[in-house]
Length: 396
Ligand code: LMR
Image 1 (cartoon, rainbow, N blue to C red):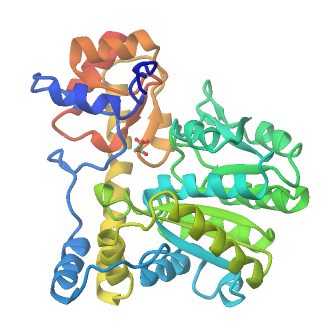
Image 2 (cartoon, helix red, strand yellow):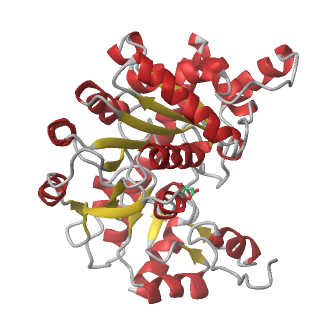
């Protein structure tokens, strides 16, 4: 059966985890996978999550199946969070949300849903985009294309070029957007640019698909849903895959959701049945622990308040790290301009290093980044930044 299978190269992001873990150098730094770390280098469990877990432990009475859509309270709370509790799509019952095992499964279910609805549909993603996007959609049989997005010289958004490319898209095309904290480049459209992109989607008739994996880590929980809300206000159909891995720090619990906005309530009900049949033959039903915890948090005013404080704390810390790193690089005498670190948002930025320089960081300094030189800024701390800046100066 498997004699013709050959090993495939490790995933560009996940492959770094084991290499880092096996490295005995006490000064090693993992700038690879996108997880938040505090000043001691650990990824803490949020206090709001701990409190809700205690409540869940005391009140849960059964582990019986929940059904394909998962935890109903989580789905409705996520729908409110993403679209706004008073939004028209909710009152018109035009959106169906299901809980998925992480945002990745949400994207994968969306890919299969699109393939079922319109097998010839193409998906356009920003250049660059999260490496896994490039695997998820083709594996469901969809063709993948890109649109210009990041100016690697100026480290900024290629807005005019992006708009020009999207003007060529139309009905039957899916265009994928990162709602905030673009992964991997850290550059997002500003609110006026989102207005223009969403108006273009309405005018041209392409279907926007929004990947929102870092809600709260760019400008704020409410503010970061702007793209979702603008597309939903203007377009009859929108696909939204959301993740709670980062903003609830629930990484390994695999918590995400897929929301499909349809042109009518009847269509939303039809689509829900198609999604349920797709998930049934894949993972049957999603796990409940993480979403049950988030259901408790988002239905408690006190715990929601605590969670918002914690998300804001993570965002502020990342932004401070961006500024401190940029200042330290300037102070070190490195002549190349790294001030873009301060202007960009979220966990990621490209350092603009060659693959050889990335390799040297790894082999000579035990500093691990993805080959594209994407770094997770949230992995820096007072204790490792000077070492990093020294290494950066050496490889430059
Ligand atoms: C990342 O890009 O590092 C994160 O989204 C984690 C992952 O699964 O790749």
